[in-house]
Amino acid sequence: MTKKQKKKKLALHWKILLGMAAGVIFSLVLLSTSWGASLTTHKVGGEDIEISRAALFVKHWIKPFGNMFINALKLIAVPLILASLIKGVSDLKDISKLSKMGLRTISTYVVTTLLAVTIGLLVVNSIDPGKSITEETRDDLVQSYSGDADSKIKDAEKQKESGPLQALEDLIPSNIFNAASNNGNMLQVIVFAIFFGIGLILIPEEKSKPVKAFFDGFNEVILKLIDLIMLAAPVGVFALLAGLVVESPSKDLFAALLWYSVSVVIGLFIMIVLYTLIVYLFTGKNPKYFLGGIAPAQLLAFSTSSSAATLPVTMERVEEHLGVKEEVTSFVLPIGATINMDGTSLYQAVAAIFIAQAFGMDLDLTAQLGIVATATLASIGSAAVPGAGMVMLVIVLAQAGIPEAGLALIFAIDRPLDMLRTTVNVTGDAAVSMLIGKSVGKLGDPQVKDWDDNYDPIDSNI
Image (tube, rainbow, N blue to C red; front, top):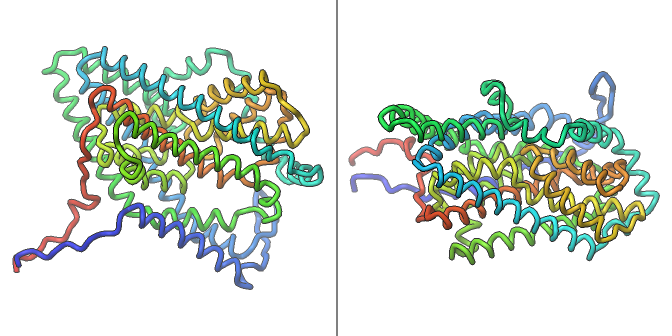
């Protein structure tokens, strides 16, 4: 025997699941102890507030590791988009291929978003969750979360004051370095990368070759950095879930919002089933293949509540484990992370009807069709970061004439549901990427690269 046999490694998604479970169990055990459950005074914004010792300990000593993990993923999001998209566009060698792929990508995303909003409305009208909330509970929720609601309403007012073409105007950055310095400007970075890639197509090959070689190498470096960061994923999700548990509001508030949560979860589950069915019908790939390939990205989306932070992992899983060629993933997925928010649009539809029902309002078909249109457009404009959907929900409520103060009704349960709808957003991006890959002949067999293929210890020849 000349080489030691490699031990079979635990799959990444199992490591992430174990990290998530450990984070939840750790916080629950900590909260169950007399020390963890006892209250202490903590200064926040110049004011003294009472907080459990468990929450304070997790906030100072555990959650920072989760924040560092998210920051590491966000750190490489913009370089990844620049490198992969410029490389992907320039590899097409034909602008007509780019326009064909772009049209198919955007139209497919719009169709799936319309389906998501429609499913949300059908589910929420069937369950009627808002009618189970008593007036006393409604007033209690509005009072508890009125401050949070007011801040989101102010953010939404700024967006509503913009002109009708503001979104189009914002696509063109005046300074690429300024655009690249903020992950919220992802669309501007995408526009620049596509523009740069087109320039590479149009100049002579001998001139573009060294530039393309640079971005090829740059792209490989970024992908290896993703490998390194994902080695810390179990620890990162442990810290994030531990923080979520100790910061959760009281059980009484969760009980009041049970049927609303059930409505959202049922709708999101239907979307996952729909994605797997569409992938099977159009590509012939079975649900186990699809869900198994994208599972680590789904779990990371659940932990971070951010499509942008999950983007590097989504791109790697779709390309290496689902067989979609890089020319497609580098174009479809960055765009999907910014404009395809199926889970968010479904949630906005459910939330709008739920709040209307809680205030005793019966919305007719015209009003609900207005919600479909507004939620679709609002989801496209949502930033790929935690909580952004809440800001866009204010616009949906205003369009339908629903009291914006009702936003406070859903704050208690928003973070867990945000985690779930981000998972659906990422799954939708992967499904559309497979559809586009199949339609342009760029869907093949997976070419999996080992996570630590360059880091195995050298075996001795004994």
